[in-house]
Length: 259
Ligand SMILES: [Zn+2]
Image (cartoon, rainbow, N blue to C red; front, top):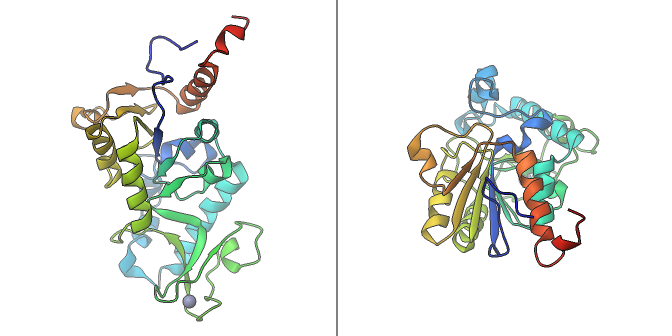
């Protein structure tokens, strides 16, 4: 049965695309970055280190911070929200760098802000990049310690986007393509104020998608809500599994349920 009272997707939605932010990972203990309890408010010196112009001197701090985050994420694993999105088989555009969508089984993930689970050479011409195994892998970076590129000897950095840096063009292009082809575009746990995430819902809407925001504390500013046809002020970890159940019962099997 399709729950009444709040928006729920139906069989008419063939191209569901999710945009996720730190809210979907908050219950892993990663916390969110913005807001009064966000990482940037609690650790202003960490926010300071996130500026690209402080490279390479900031590398020890960057490895310490992102290594810690990657380890927390790896130990906790995906949330019910991540798992529901993966089971829906929907592509994801994410602002998160924690790799939890892939850990949940999502196959198409546009990582707009990079990945804390990858080390990359500081020299862009070198192009060395490798996957990390936080906490247990063989590389020093797996344990939050700076190291040298095995190919050229330059320092390595976390493959995450710092302030004043360009977003990865491939991920950005994929995200725009997904938004344009969506017939249902769902933003989860993101304040939607940061470029380009703030542009993706309007882009999807302009291309005919129904747009939905699922956020336990959605923004009150009407201009931020204007991009969304529906705002669901509930916990995504309850809403998304509900959607998954209702969608998987659509198509002739729902009457087999006892109730
Ligand atoms: Zn290198």
